[in-house]
Length: 180
Image (tube, rainbow, N blue to C red):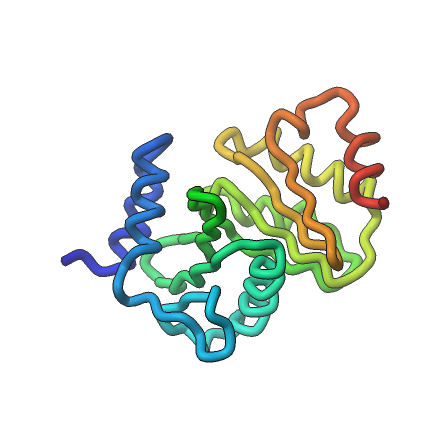
């Protein structure tokens, strides 16, 4: 049986339905077990990682939005997503970016290129909506494989798909979504 690291590495070579099936296979691996404190968050370890608390905070928010969350290991051999989210029969991978301060998020988003096609931004601070929209638009322009960006801001969940980011009215639409 392949180890989870090699299964995660396969994600870089797959697209479409094959990619989706592989994500589901990973989530259904027997190594995953629910956390004692959170029945809808599954892990294979990693509690000692530097990023564990940020991952757990974001995972708990995702559960509040109705997702079942699989926290993925962080192997050193390959770049992998941080999470698999499951909701209504659909499995999706996400790379977490937590925003603590006012520094530019643009570089943070670009760090995910080649790691995962979907990003989860967990906003823990106020951030200029226009600057965020411009960074998101640039991320989609640079990363042709990017699918979506999911933003958790307080009790809000905002999903930005590629088509929305390419829309001529994106800045105006995003600012309205983000600030309401």
